[in-house]
Image 1 (cartoon, rainbow, N blue to C red):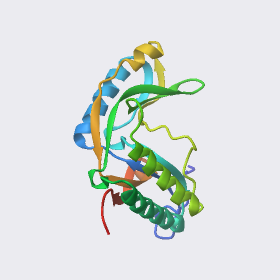
Image 2 (spheres, helix red, strand yellow):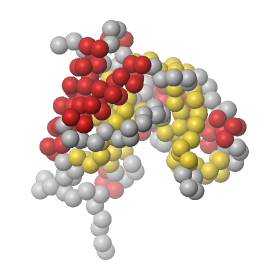
Image 3 (cartoon, one colour):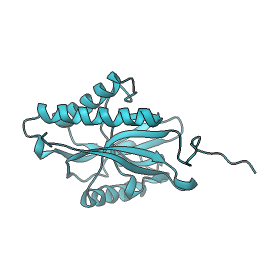
Image 4 (tube, rainbow, N blue to C red):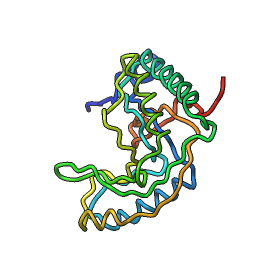
Length: 209
C-alpha cells in the first residue's frame, strides 16, 4: 500500500508547510443566511459540492504553501496591514459591514463555482483592507493571490445548473454581515479527513496600540 501525504512531515509529525490564506469569517446568524442561500441554489443544480457551514469565508488574499518561517512572516504582514488599516479608517472600531446577496458564478470548462458577494460595489473599507494586506505580503516576498479582487463567498463547487444563469442569479436574498477581525487560515485535511479551514492567527479591526 502506498500512502500519500498532503505535505512532507517534520520530525514532530507536523506538516512542513501549511496552505494559508487571509480571510473574513461569518457569525452564526450570517452563516445561517448563507446556508439558506446555498440550499436555494442547490435546488437549481444537477450536481455540485456545497461548502460546509464551518468553511464559509471571504478570502482577502490567498498566500499558498508556507513553511514555518513564511508562516511567521505572514502573521507579521497581517499584523502590520491591519495596523495600517486601523490608522487609515476613521471609524475603524466599527469594523466592516457588508451587504451580501449577489449570486454569480466563476465559469470553468465543465462546471462552475457558485458564489455570493456584495450587492453593488463593495465598501471602500474592504478594498482598502485587502490592498493593505496584499502590499504587506508582497513587501515580504509572499504571494497574495490575483491582482483582481472579486470579494465572494464560495457556496458550491463543481456546479452544473439545471436552469440558465439568469434564473440561478435570481436565487438571492439580501442580508448584512459584520466583521471585526481578520484571520489567517490554514487549509488542510486533518488525518486524511474532509477539507478544513483552521484559524491560526486573528487580528482585531479597530484595535488601538
